[in-house]
Length: 317
Image (cartoon, rainbow, N blue to C red; front, side, top):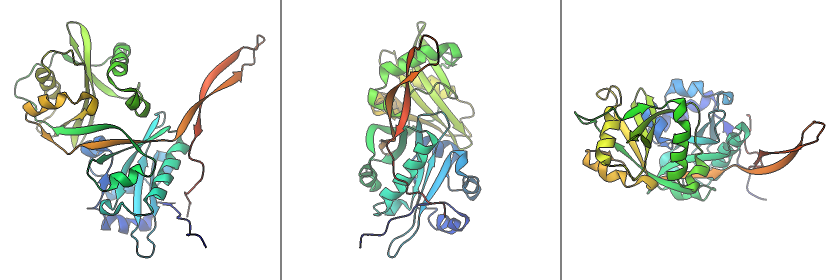
């Protein structure tokens, strides 16, 4: 007889004990959320995540003979093209043979919500990286995160909050400087993102996405290499953030902006190990013809999502 199928079920009340047991063995795979909001494993946070209609699903691969249980969480904001894995645990046992089933269940849930991609971040030398890549994820970029203290004196006037009128210029800068491989995984977010923009001689040459929470401030700058004195520009960005004494400030340096790392080093930044940014594509765009109900019978074309994930592994009990 073949091996019994692995059933992934939603997180339930009785899983809190497992969660408590592994609370110090969690692999956080979404840096911005973790650094700005803290651990996703707080009991109160978990209880609010039991309802998958909130765009948060926590899946459990129950323990079997000789194997530990696995738990993973996926988070999705309606309207975005990508969902993100928030955490996996236990972090030191993710070469588990059932990991692929758990990741497939998380991917299927994300696809059912309308996500086109599922993203995760994993440290370069973490044992889980190879296992996750073998489950259909591929690297689309690399990233280091720097914790930097703002300098005592810096020019903050060149950095200003983005206005709706700046969106076209920001989008153009994004399309110019961000590689197509990254754009396919992280399409330009038009709405709901806080940004600062930098101008030099009247031209917009940089912008930074800002995520702030009770635990910290997370900056992801995109800066044109034609800027003059990147050290001063980054110093101004750091000094522009509110309350640096209460909340640490983190700056994400992507592989396609790796030249910023020398400036962050000169500013006294402390760097984390390099992380792989991973994507699993959940859908393909297919062009279909829609016949409009008009006298002229004009033909219109649009895009629809066709899920790649076909077979359910998620069970309700």
